[in-house]
Image 1 (cartoon, helix red, strand yellow):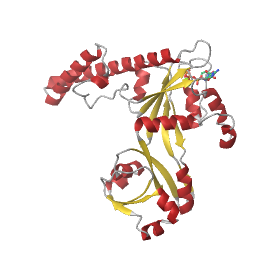
Image 2 (cartoon, helix red, strand yellow):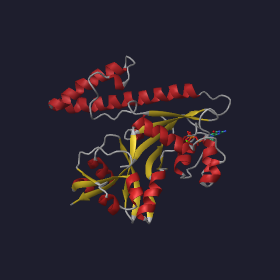
Image 3 (cartoon, protein in one colour):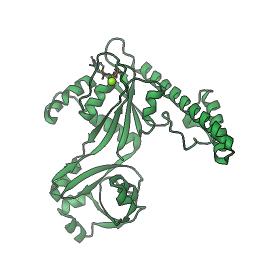
Image 4 (cartoon, protein in one colour):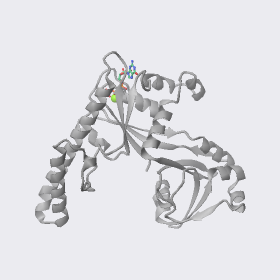
Length: 312
Ligand SMILES: Nc1nc2c(ncn2[C@@H]2O[C@H](COP(=O)(O)OP(=O)(O)OP(=O)(O)O)[C@@H](O)[C@H]2O)c(=O)[nH]1
Ligand SMILES: [Mg+2]
């Protein structure tokens, strides 16, 4: 259950270049828009300096950063954008390089495309529910009238997020997701440079940049937009960072690690990462009373090191 992010943008804006900079996957960059039916999917690691320090304490043999799943959708249009209904956030790449670049116009176009895709999505759901509601099922008839009102609203230019009665839970709209605009070019992030720098090691790459890397910058924006926190699991086999939304519980954390841990959840041992590093071991932290036992509902805090006790 990694965090899921989709990349959208007009043809040749630099979507695949961004995908490569984020994931180091080396997907093919085309000089002009090609109609590819396949989306690129890859994982982008989230750097976190706390992770290495925790791993050193427990002498972890393997260190695994948290990661974001990134989908690069070729082209636009309702069918292609439909690939993005499950993502947590959308990255919109705006062309900011070259003489005829107009990033703000690009952003407007993308916004419209997403809106059209959502209207299409509502209409399809409406058609389906209209047929099914003939059975007389009460819930379906309620959804039908709700969808009809929603469509009427959309046609007055309102956005889905504005719908006063809330959206039917079956809908998976795009326009209500956080949208993060990434301008590709000198005024934003130079993606072409970023895609070249992934060939170099971290220190070398840093000497070519003024600020943070594209990956760092985009992770920072995502963390802010989605209100993300990190928690850690610290084992000698593997020490690992994970992502949650702020306010999510120990049970959510367990489910992020493995469904079995959520199913058999008993209790959760919690140590602050800095306490663990300072104490030098779980045992010493426990001895000093710095390890707590929490239940399912505990709201995980950024930097918690968790050990889920479970039984399946
Ligand atoms: N000069 C310049 N060229 C760029 C930049 N970013 C991308 N390009 C070029 O633009 C072309 C398209 O880049 P892609 O990353 O494939 O763009 P895309 O949005 O994935 O394109 P499609 O998937 O075909 O719509 C390539 O030839 C890139 O080298 C940039 O910042 N500066
Ligand atoms: Mg592409």
